[in-house]
Length: 467
Ligand code: BES
Ligand code: MN
Ligand code: MN
Image (cartoon, rainbow, N blue to C red; front, top):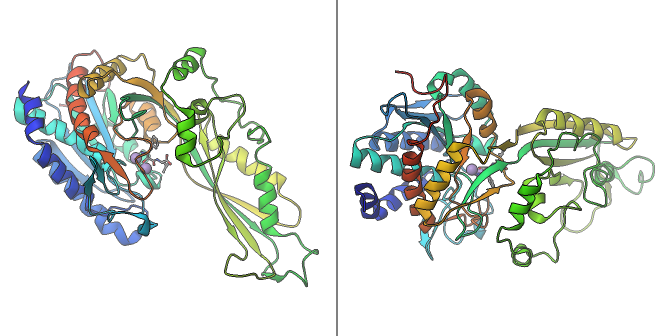
């Protein structure tokens, strides 16, 4: 066993205790009462990066929550520079009563570490800090130049990150980015993700009469905003599960036959999937398999809908307004700005008469794909094989990490999505968990990845470390 591998074995318990400390900080980015906790979390991470032996550790302000930066750039200009990204903010925890242990009191049960942020994304980010620390302690060096960029606003749409990257291109210059914020295909099927969907998020406000009305005195004489909203939403898809908005599919890149074939060979058990979700049958766009619908087809979903009377008993009322949150997952080469415009125009155009409809755009992000034959992908594949003892499958996922597209556009760097979570790990839900075996395999994989990346020709003009 190498001294690094040995050190990782020795420090298993300590690594877990340290991660628990990070998980105790309630860094919920969307709730203003947690602003100080978010800041404390950034500072905790800065200290952890410092202890790991990184240099130039800084907590940098943005218009929103701070960014944490650190680097180690002594591998030499001929070695690649790797930008490791993660997010230290987490989602809210409600409904709190459904948690079996408190969300910010991490607890191990059945080999799983339960806490908000265990998998999304503190646990996965921490993997890389421990890998770099072990390499620096045991070898006094790293096989590549490394920069860390850790943000505190991913769960609220990374509103200030693109600006930050643009203003700090030199500080962030890299040949390849690494993100662990995705999943394995299944517990014993390690995976590398080469595609993510993008996102457009809208709020639709439908307004009618200037106040709620008695539905007996007025019902039948004016348009009902709740009904108008229902009609608008129902009209957005046809009976084949396809979005009816003109132009919506125009830029969608078709799946390649070899991709479809490779996905068909993945160990996907449709019956088990149906059972786990508690539905009678699956539903989606006609003509595509479940994995194709999840990974390569755009969607339109109602995230929430409200308005009118929802209290106890009954109240005969004609509501003055109704609202919905609607979002669309995007695939290559759809453009979030264009899809937002198409959706808004279509909704406004198809609005029933007698109501006013306003469509407001919230956050979003571009879809991303990494070429599976990129030399860095092959290095990642060897690293996962070393870390998990099994070669990975190539998958895409349906979620979104908008910064991947920003790295490509602003830094010219492809992103390796090497995830250690599981789809069933309850990210964003009560009882979020990370499998401890995957945490430790993740640290081994990260060590191997830095070593493997140190062996490939990646250095591109303009990237690489400064000084
Ligand atoms: N880690 C997820 C992204 C993800 C989810 C990747 C599922 C792969 C599978 C990330 O923290 C997240 O939740 N992203 C949001 C994006 C949004 C807030 C812009 C998402 O996908 O909803
Ligand atoms: Mn995440
Ligand atoms: Mn998330």
